[in-house]
Image (tube, rainbow, N blue to C red):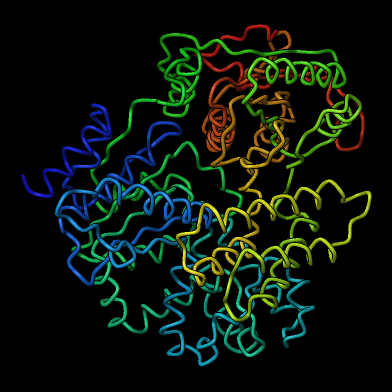
Length: 601
């Protein structure tokens, strides 16, 4: 039996007869798209796919597999899983495991593009030779760009901000029209002053490939296999770059879940998995077995029925109802009291469990719950972060500034990280207003740096440096919430994506809270629904279908953060942004076909 057959047998045993997972792993299709819902074994399938590609010797030296994802944390998680699992899978007598770094390059899009600019960026601009020392900045805020004092006029700063908006809003024509001016400002204003916006990193590599086809051809040949994880989160810049990278003979594997596209507000392209399937003539395989909820029939049904509602919002083919636990209370104070009591009971009964209380967004109702928890001396972790909050941005920026000063020689040790952490604690100032945010972010920084030394010990010192810088530049400390010592975590659903806890309470299941006014409720505004007792029931039509599916994705991601059980709560009275108490109804998602509400105990 040769190496390939041995690995195939090992993988078959590992996947315990899951036909769809094995079909994806052993597929010989050159263009493959894998629909992988939450809890369906995506990571195991992806790692086995990589192992099988390596075992088949389809990557001749010195060529590599290129594995990309949108999120820096997802990229390093893949790197960790590959480093831990593949050597075990390929530990065969007489076989020397491949040196993984020689066979696979794993990164997020920005890390990949930064590497290319480091080698060839000088062909576009001499200043790109020192890209490691260039400060990466956000280009969304025109006022901030003008105040950098790098020679930009108010109008020029506005045009740069408009390019950012075009990417976020998936306005391809507008981005194309602004592209040349944007490049001009990068070359004439940003780079001479040692700045480079995040969007420019991807755009400049795309332009490099356009202007130097020989470099593009080299990378197309160097990476004969391209694997993209969390593909549904891809934005315009990443998508255009990917189209360039895919050559005639490139083997392409796209992995994602269309129902987990919740980053539309930062530019994730709608219906991209469908578009990619058609553009590249891809074979599609959908994983079918839910391992997260395999012992919980109601959660299995809830997962299934939500996906059926997404597949056909007008007439979903739900055969059996999923029972969900819903508590409806007279006001926000009663709701807070129930959540506090329920949390206490769940964690007392399950001593090793953790629980997340999730919100669509931070609001006045969340503040009432926080006060209730404080009054009862409940220990919780505050993670209601918004990526555009000044405190959240400022903390990451200051940590990045201090880190670049402290580790300019690119040597990273436990002792030096401890000193860096102590310096941050000493220099970060907090007020009563921002204490919860800053203290939580400091705790996440501490956890992250500890993981750098322990979980990511296999990385080189330079790779650890890049991991820390990428995380701080991407403002991604929130992705460490899963590892906090607190057993109760308050978070937004967007901040919780990719994380999971034993129990989840979705706390704001009220009209205008979830969905909120800027999303679906503002479009509907009693025009596309009916009120049935205490319930809001939505009437889907073409005008609101897109927004409905966007919000259903957020709802689905919240539900699937639970490993054991999810609970829902709603109030008959909500507090609006002006502090007024208003009558409200149970949100429309808990009244979709295939959902049967039961009183939560």
